[in-house]
Image (cartoon, rainbow, N blue to C red):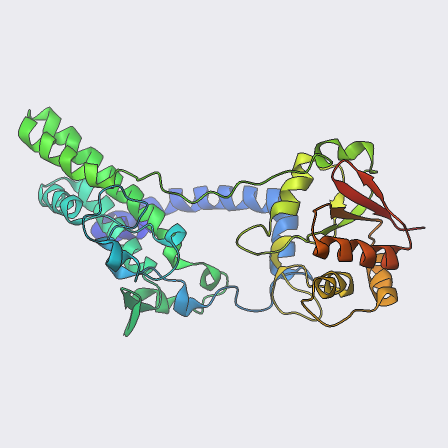
Length: 355
């Protein structure tokens, strides 16, 4: 993007720069291909590569109103909470706030004849327009007005990106322009203008309001290497999933074990023979039985569940002990599937499938 802006600004310098750019591109891309040949193969031609759109392009753009409407993650937001509640997406994807005061400072910085500031500001503006996605959305309402991202929406690989996440680079461009502006003001002794700029920057102070969910690691997992073999493949209850809250807990437990075992599931992006797109491991017969034990689905077949676990290479089922009727029912179901009574180690039931 920066190269395109520079080429547009100084077209006469393009020809002289092309040989050096070509050499650098060849060296960088060649090194990248050598180091990443296998990951690239898996990404582009592997059997588990996604076979469908990962995200809906109509919902992966930024909300234009976020440019001037702060979210609860910003400390200073006088009377804007109602408007912020209408912004598209969740606060984790609402990172486009610049604010009227900072926009005014940016305008002043660009009006001053500083080529670097203007170049960076132009890059930031282009990235902001691209971050809006395929159509213009204002306070959660899709206006239907087409935006520049629609031009690349069908380009392979590029179309899989989420344009809303370009906001982080927009913020970087804003920061660079402001730094250049402050440097110029200090060099010319403009104390009042420096003070006004710092006041504008105060509107960017974060509220330290990020939502954090604590994860409790059962006592079994830090010592799991004493109970499991390195080649064990583990199925956990609860299962690893893409659920926003708690879905990744089993992955954290695996990390806490020092990666003492392998897992049959997870949160990832891929596909299989039955699903063109997977964001987590499919729910198998065993996990359907766990859900049925909790009263959340039809009964499952324990023999079919056993065959499926063995086909996936699972050797151990771990059931995190919790004092609830649902967990007692899950233990009964796991005993039926594995044929093992299980043993309680600290706060986890361990069921090893017979060879």
